Amino acid sequence: MAVAEKIKSIAQAPEKEYYLPGHRTCAGCGPALAYKLIAKAAGKNTIFIGPTGCMYVANTSYACGPWAVPWTHAQITNGGAVASGIAEAFKMMIKKGKIQDEYPNIIVMAGDGAAVDIGLQAASAMMYRGHDVLFVMYDNESYANTGVQVSPMTPYGGATMFTPPGPVIPEGKKFFPKDPMALFCGGGHPAVKYGATASVAYPIDLMNKVRKALAYEGPAFLHVQCPCPKGWMFPSDRTVELGKLAVETGMWHMYEIENGVKTFNITPKKLKPVDEFVQTQGRFSHLKPEHVARLQAWVNERAQHLGVEAVLPSVK
Ligand SMILES: Cc1ncc(C[n+]2csc(CCOP(=O)(O)OP(=O)(O)O)c2C)c(N)n1
Ligand code: SF4
Image (cartoon, rainbow, N blue to C red):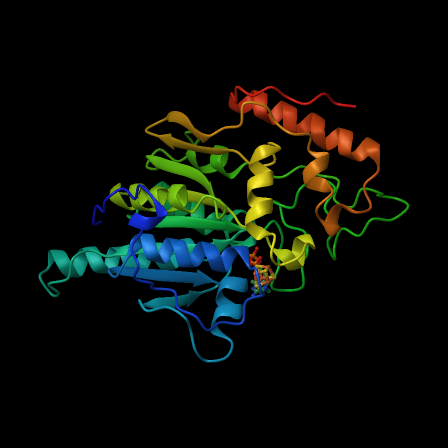
């Protein structure tokens, strides 16, 4: 894949857009912002694969689409497999001299459901076989397009249509989320040489990770946190603020794993209490202090497990 330059500042970011105005995403949609930045960083020679989810349905309603580069729909189950087919077709056609094209950036834009739940098998198989594809998981922490149902990435305590708080399960969702970086980049998929977490709240970091991932030959993984005003229940002008607050409270960590070596990119010296994040969103409005304490205990454990060197809040 084409190796593009590192972007040092917003002023230096390419002006050209490949994800254009005109789509039925919500005002303040985090995943739409992710798409814009990823398309900008990847540039012209790119093919997107869109498994079913908001970033397919909301972007293409109806019979149109905002991409200035080729894009294809995939089933929510098989984004990885469709990308594998496209990648191998290009490799073969170039090898046989049937086309003169440069090998394109092939990028799957999968929601959390399409990446680590319904679509996990195909994603894992693509990475295992070593296809030259960037698999992006835009994580809005629910099955959003179908009306916000719980996914493996919904945080503990999150209310969704399938995890309504009630007398039997007062906290709503009672499980803690999956760890996709551990799943894909923790050694279980030997062909994956580059994996990173990113956030729409840190656009330069996100764009550079896209370029770095594309520069690697073989599969790469990018897990992008994308606040979703509808699913998380917050005002649509606070998307970026909440992305930052997630990092400041340790609900999200920014790091990359390159050839097995982990590097933290943006780490606060001291984490804010997770309650500050919880307070901002309607999906957590039912939580009682003991639930917030449980979430804080998990945040602290995860930070320690990942090796984050920040001062942690006390668990009340
Ligand atoms: C096999 C299959 N099961 C269920 C659906 C219904 N469906 C359409 S969009 C969607 C939600 C996708 O969630 P996610 O991948 O997290 O993306 P998001 O909508 O949150 O962007 C579901 C379940 C489907 N299209 N195909
Ligand atoms: S529900 Fe969330 S992810 Fe879907 S379009 Fe709206 S803000 Fe974006």
